[in-house]
Length: 342
Ligand code: 5HM
Image 1 (tube, protein in one colour):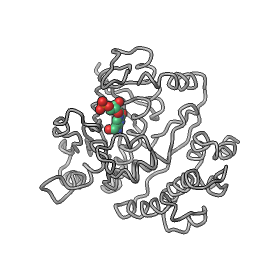
Image 2: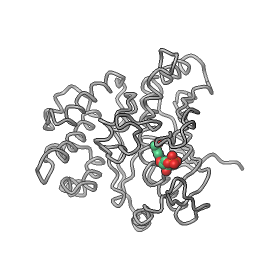
Image 3: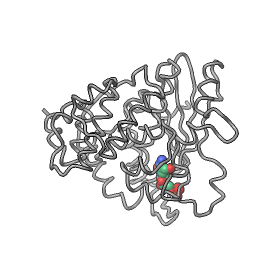
Image 4: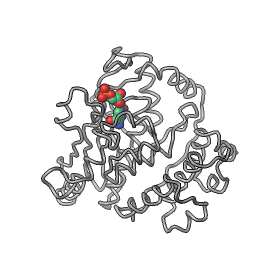
């Protein structure tokens, strides 16, 4: 019997299984552009609940601040290093001009009008899905043929495109990646693309369907193999994993919400504002977006304040899953981890 892609209750299971496959049974050992890596070709998995988009593995130290920042950067259609480079300085080396990102600024391709158009591809696809039942045409291309014209292109899109499909009141998404770094890229990509899927479902007033992730070259870089082994050990030893539900994006979320959240993000990033948990509560956002601003305030304190610890009121106001993650990621937030372990 022909089966669809294997399904996982959370991205964590797919991440661990793919790491194990590429590390322990690689199909190829490659050295593309000087990066030694272990590779398997042509893999896929499906998440019936795309909100389970974070792994809770202490050795991996997933960074929810970066994940939300990147998802918002995409949703706002941006490509500036000023924002994304603050959350992940390593992205600076991919910029062709030191100001903007190139092919990896996926939101720029999705949420701005293409040349000769006045409406973004995202809005065009939503319009199509509103009007044509069971459409197969809701495809959002990201990789463009012009990226092949420069032989030393430092930033070629790894995402080929995102496919949105409305079936029986649910919005499904299929993601096609030409390449995915299973240890680093996969988690941030699944996080952000499922956020785009959920955002699209909210705009259409549909229920969130399943998410399918497909990869051409799935690989683990040799320089990350030791950390990957620690992740695999932890996943093997731990019988019961922390199970945290991820909250539902509010129905009122739209472009204006993203713009307003990013106004406060910029104030915090530039250290122009500093917020207590109470002040964030009074900004007029739903609890879901308050959580994101709490994360940005945590990161502001880590980046800009001299203090050894992040303020308690902000850590205590975080949802348990986010508190668990920041407690593992930063020593200055470790007290938060003790609380959530109780
Ligand atoms: O040589 P190449 O352009 O394929 O190198 C890009 C590397 O970044 C690959 O290892 C790719 O898998 C990884 N990557 C990723 O996994 C890059 C981006 C940014 O486009 C991404 N996910 N989103």
